[in-house]
Length: 536
Ligand code: GLN
Image 1 (cartoon, rainbow, N blue to C red):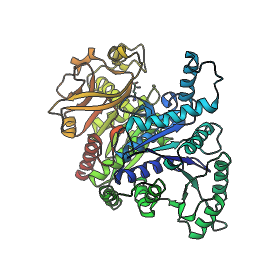
Image 2 (cartoon, helix red, strand yellow):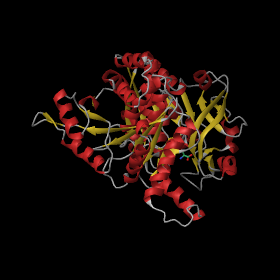
Image 3 (tube, rainbow, N blue to C red):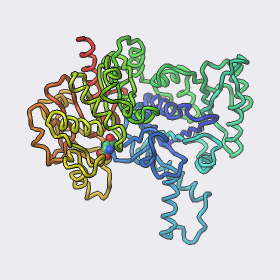
Image 4 (cartoon, rainbow, N blue to C red):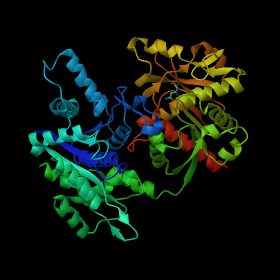
């Protein structure tokens, strides 16, 4: 291909319209027509990355192979495109300003007054171009976070305006908007869309395509009206009514011809669409009737975006097991030995997700005891593994004081400690172990049975880990260290022999689950939950 194309996605009217899903879905269709696609997320906030942001504010922090802490939309990009994203697939205003200020301090601007235009906007354009050249993509989709009209996103929009001026043939703007239905008037309302497009045009951006989210399909008269007021032909007004699952969105776009419209506008050949695997997987899953119940016992259960990748992993695992996984969100802070039976009975599996800090720990330990004693399939992720180790040490090995230095810095039994880990990353100068690391699996374990491989690679985001000082005390033939770093220094996975499925991992498997391939541990956990359900 001669020239790289750029598709910009902006959002109007309200947030949470699913811009990330829209970008991923279009990306998947273009990929399925033979194009190499990458997606860049530009976030308008000032934090340099979301690593320090509360999950309540920002949802999950998605960690890439190369150890970047990024926006959760990158998870959607990976799950839809079945490609790894990297650090350069996400940038924030904070990061861009930080780079420009560092250059200014180095004297790179040779005495010039450093300004939003052109210095910040140039840096934004550079970020877009870099994402393309780093990946050698044919098409770069750029998702602008936030909503048109926000003060923070203005430099990004200005950069798009300049980019289009420079390369009108290679760029396209898709504006995602809301067309609400007002039940008292029994009418779909186009005014909010008109206003948000007006905001875009005021700053010199005429969108090429309007992608209209609504709870129903738009009539052609409504498309004509939107087109007329927003200065596009009705053909370029695409409706995107609600669908049952996010994985249906690409199917919807394929049906309404969104991808073809985009390729035509970019003067690219249509190529054949090779999309049948995705389609059949999603359609088959929609017909599934069998259910399995899994409880997730965590701290951020009031904001489910905090566990986005876990939720999606269960859908992928459900697809491969022909079962719908019904999740019960249990607030760990409200769980105790008195109510645990009531809260967890009837569940076919229990998962403890990652987390930080000591709030909710006693509830998590209670849930783990329940799963261990009642032979309920159990899956512990990161903090979940750490809690499983503590629970076992206290209640089976008799180390009543066993603890983590994260929750109890003065503990005399730090079975989970910072020490080992700090040693392992000292060279890198960081405080958190981030990104992909290798792990060797013991051949006779459930972990190996799931992966069917001796050497695996998984992504990490943690500070604490199993304290090697206590290894021999766990050597009772039941508690198994099923995965370790290749040098044997770090414990990566544990499991119990005398239990149908009790597995913990120090890494985050949910970050590598894809529609095309459910994560082996989620797949096997769901299979174990299904076996439990069917033997009752
Ligand atoms: N808080 C724990 C640690 O830092 C676990 C982190 C996590 O679950 N991601 O090691």
